[in-house]
Length: 356
Image (cartoon, rainbow, N blue to C red; front, side, top):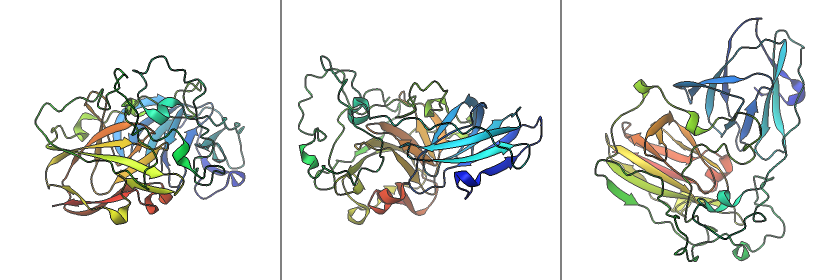
């Protein structure tokens, strides 16, 4: 925390009776942090530097590059600022105190939880007669590239491209996403298959109210994207002129990451016409969360009903999830668009965006 290890105990000072604004920034390279201050609620007032309607929570999951401003009103002498990693292998920790040297109890880390079938396959609403109780994957290690005994992932039931989905009612991959009321030029990218893709999600979920693996039903009020609403004067009210769909893809055994099955070095630029309003659809075909970051332009996240909800510059796309956001292409030039997990970007999950 601010360069200090947990034992070094970085301390932020406050005076009795003060209301304190904390700016939480995930500046790590590869770590999702779940942040809370035991005994003290946080009121979120900004997301990625943009004002939002205040929402009070106990805990916030932060992807790499995400920023949240929160207000707290401490009444005790000291509180622990606790940020455990998503895989529950470690934590960052500091203290909010009235004077240097004070400490508060440090909570135990939560236990790691396995992925559910919804995390691996998406919208399971139309699948009947199936018992998913034993069908879960251990997600205790977020980086699974070194898992022993996984030499041939082709034998795992992760590639659903050949599944007969005809008898699965209600499993449309587009379910829950409202069409734009104005005509758009739709450009659907075709997901590639080959050595860079080890699985596909045919029926992605579209919900924004899921806090994510490890945070569900933990007894705490956890922030979700469904809670975030930008103030009205921030948002661009225009509808989309064009739509682009890209799939987040990867191969865990090879440790390659890509968009539409193409690593950055094999890809061509994505073109945004200058001044146009672009709807971007991202479908996560992997079992890992990806904080996707577009340089130069804001991303206006939509909910499942197609309503613009919150403006951000980094958006977490959970496993087997489909999200959409609108971009106003108002910045001429060449821009990077990538997963903000450093190793994922370096291994190929990146594209160039050209605005012209």
